Length: 385
Image 1: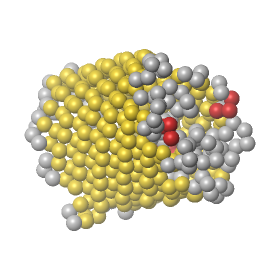
Image 2: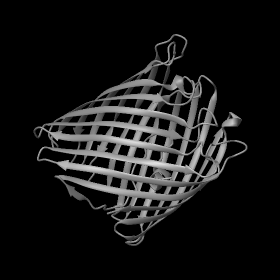
Image 3: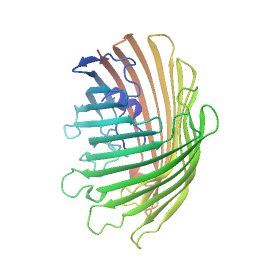
Image 4: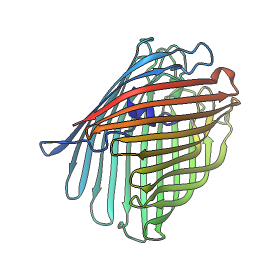
């Protein structure tokens, strides 16, 4: 299991990130491109990798995760091409052994001081071992994503407008018809108005709409999500940075057989750096997720707190606490999930990190068979040039 996957996988399915990768990986100049390779290897013990209420399955897990990044910059644009894989070997269960692939290409282009365009293309092939449709097979899916955002207005202008879109095609690769009802195309469009309040703070108003088109014939899950949000964004150079959005969301189903749902909505992504060596993070969200296990939709209220502190130039600790309340609308299921993790990171040199970590997860559900506890212990090494 990759170190960064262990420490940063969120409470909802998503691609792994490199938030705690080697701080300053070196690059090689390759025909005008900056080439940055990294490698993570780990050994962990997972005492309930299927997330079972009874008869939990445990295994030692070996993780091997190479990552490659190509970067190029011109006077008006920047480009990144990246690829990584996460290979997990479950020594007690070959059926759980899996390899995740992540490929992306992204760019930011500044045509003039007032006109900027960012775009990205991504493809992910992922397998999940817990919270699966069946306990004998990983959930296997691919996600192809294309997104773009255009911003009008100079960086220091009083007002800015941004228009964005994001398309995702999700397909499952399980045997038979497992997860076939989850396949969908989702198209999001949004518009944001930023108004500068001070040197480092801007207010914002956002309108967002997402169309979900399910691929299974006769599906009643086709729906339109609409959100209206107001909030503020804080400059990344400040001690406190990030954004906060609050508002309301509504899910309208195309089918008359489904009830529509509305709810307050919020999103907060904040980073506080009281010192250069100490970083606190807050990620909070209330929104509708797509339905799972027969639910029309899942109302997800989640909060994640994190703290990374560098005690010396070689020793750092990482702590995080996560809480999620999931209501599975239409089937009466409610899950309360609590998770916390701790890790010590030893950096004997610039190019290597050694991580010793632990994570505990408790999923408390009113559907007894969905409740479980899980402990993961990890020793990992992350290396760069």
